[in-house]
Length: 235
Image (cartoon, rainbow, N blue to C red; front, side, top):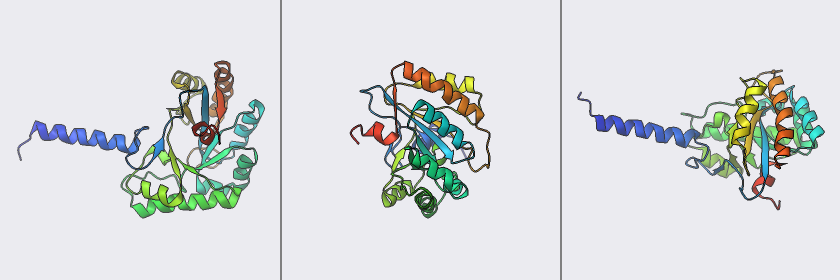
């Protein structure tokens, strides 16, 4: 079969477009989503994915010490394993979002599977904390066909991030050095109080990084808010 450079270029371009639609932080191709808040005021949102875990208590202690609200995108299986920790997050005044039930990669998955993942997590969070999330974040930030329908049926709004710390695999110094340059008005910062479905994960580097980031960002004049309040200041 003859090879045509034009066809190859089209294929590469199509693959790049699909990759952006799936994981691009500003993409809304598979459903409504935001990746930052308004740029008109010095407010930012600190978010934590993959919890709750045994380490979440340390994050809560840190946030309480600094009097900083945050948004926790929780995994349903982890909520079922540690319901008291999900309750503690809500009782401390933080926001809870839906991060799926088992943290799968949605690419190539059927629509029904995607809906069930978010529906099961929604129920698990509500049963444990008494709070029904209004926000969701896709595992790995990867969306797929059926994502929009799941959002619509469950009444959830998608949230990506402005900057991600890669804190599950980096030391605190590196995490801080990656996050700080990306912060500006309306930024949504993504860190992790869990490590997917791991029990008792080591999140010491995350805690150390957050302990350094909060005072630096406050000194720069930023106010910390939950994602919902960041997006709707009057809420």
